[in-house]
Length: 113
Length: 116
Image (cartoon, helix red, strand yellow):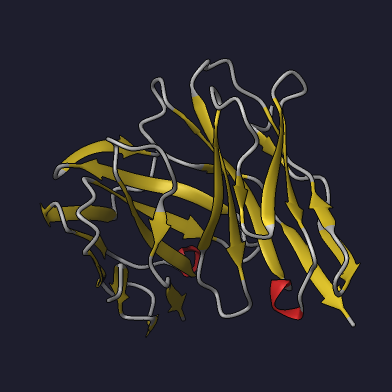
């Protein structure tokens, strides 16, 4: 019954590695997002996809590449991980047809050593 | 200028009392939405309440209500009859509907602690 799911929940890796985070929503929403929450708990949009099309890219380094194979999935691939990439990454989804909230996944805590 | 300002980094309230968490916003977009989210220590982001800029009445959801004062650009969250489980970080957020791409812009959050 999970509405927005992310895997993995925790990710610990070395600098320079490449990693992916997967996100899936079963709410029938047409828009999906990636947010980053830093160590001070500040949340900031990274990307937004609507019907598999990129509509927001908030000056994120091009080491971060989102991929949306279909409306229900939005994955995040990160190349050449850096210490500063350590954060919690949240996937979210919403419906553009209706007002109302964005629904968030449980978050992925990424730690780069 | 900050788009969303939450001036209370931390708040304390006694159980069963009401508490107001402040949020002011800044936008020139006539169409926008205001949101509150709760983030408990477990880390998930829980959607609480939504107010549209054209809504005539203040939004309410159970013990949560949003005190929307458009002229003052404020959207304070009121939690009535606080419970221990309300202890969490609370974020105010705004979505600008014209050219905003549906993204949410968040405030810095208010850490609420409910005491016995």
